[in-house]
Length: 83
Image 1 (cartoon, helix red, strand yellow):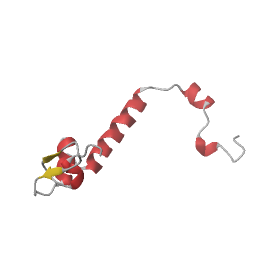
Image 2: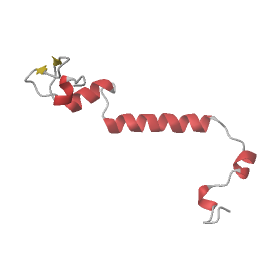
Image 3: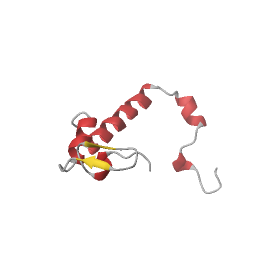
Image 4: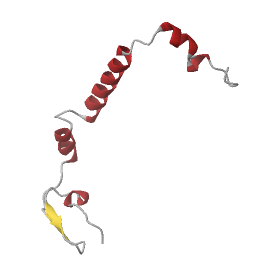
């Protein structure tokens, strides 16, 4: 059997041996709390918004020249034939 974590069984602590026998705590895992800890006390929505905003700022900092923008057509301006 493969290695398993007590957290895969929704428990907070414990261990699984090489035979696949798990010895886990009886305390339920609070997945929301665990995720918030991993994300620096942010919700998933807050984290995604932060990363989206950082990505947008990075792209805007590239200062793509207007001449390049003219050469690369907008997807909105393409018809079904690609032109």
